[in-house]
Image: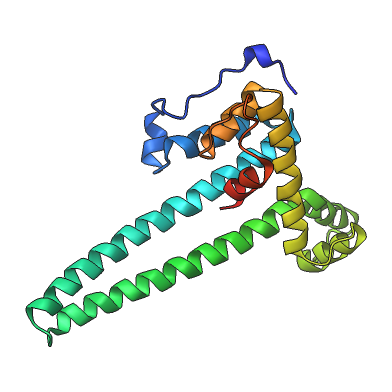
Length: 216
């Protein structure tokens, strides 16, 4: 890990730069992305945890926006139905609300599935293996899914989901040890920015809650 003395922990409540606002990031999401950049090449566990935390925040932010839109459509549509039971526009808006809800669920499922593969690929070194095969044979077109499956088996995993769950569990244990028990400032920053409050005296949050917040 790098020199702790040179690290300035961003406050989850602190203002964040205009470019972050322009990208539609929350303060927590911005802080996690910043932490990820600052720990690159210094602390692999913290870097990966910050990456997962930031992507979870982004997924949830988009889900919240869609939920708000769905709620507005249902309120307007419901009001029109009360005004006239046969109002086509009211039924249309309620249908739109249902569609938004379905799209939101599909989006979150897809993003989390994709995120799982990205995290597992990073852990297993799938991209590195692909690059090695292409360097050995420039004409080769390695199948990433086949390589992933092979590396999963070599490391004792039956599926992407099983491997991902183990990664999250191991990271949560590390975050608990470093952030809660040892009060490492960088890990405290991570814990705060995934929406939790570290308390070294009470030894909270516990591992299971840290794992849940990293993933959901």
